[in-house]
Image (spheres, rainbow, N blue to C red):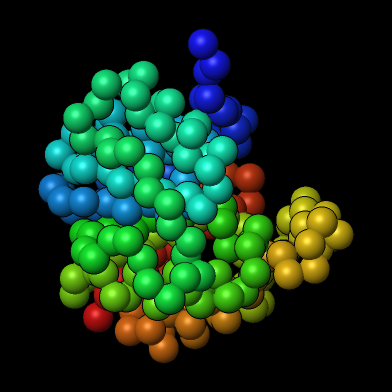
Length: 200
C-alpha cells in the first residue's frame, strides 16, 4: 500500500512556536480554515493540541491533498476534516464561513495575486474580529533583513520571478483595503514572523 504522507522538516521545527502564538489568537471553538496546507502536518498538529476547534485544511495541489488526507486518516481525529481543493487566488472559495484563517509559508512562494486573493477570500468568510494568521519571512521598513532571508529571497526569485519575500507594509495595505485591522506582529525563530490581522 502506498503511503502518501509527506514530511516537511520546516513544519516539524516551527509547529510548536506557531502553536504557542495560535493559543492566544484562535477562538476556543469554531472552524479554522488553513490555506495552502502543504503536507498537512500543521493542521494535524494543531488539531491534536486544540480539540475544541475543527480544522479544515486545503491546498490547490492534488499531491499535497493526498498527503493531507493520509495524515488525517492515520490520525483518526474527529476535528480534522479531509482537505479541500482551494486556490487562494480564485474569485470564490468552496468555503462560506470560518472562525479563523491560517496561512503558513505561502505568501513568498506564490504570485502576488495569490496574496490579493487570500485577503479578499478571508475577508468574505470571517466574522467581525475573526483572525487571519500569517507566518513566514517578510521585509519590514526600518528593520534589517537577515542575510539568510536575503539569500532565500534570491533563491526564490531564481526559481520563479513571481515569488519572493514580501514587504510587510504592502501586505498590510492589502489587508487594510480588504477590511482588516493593522498587523499584530510576533518575532519567531529563524527570522520568521507571526502576523495577525483581524476582520473589522
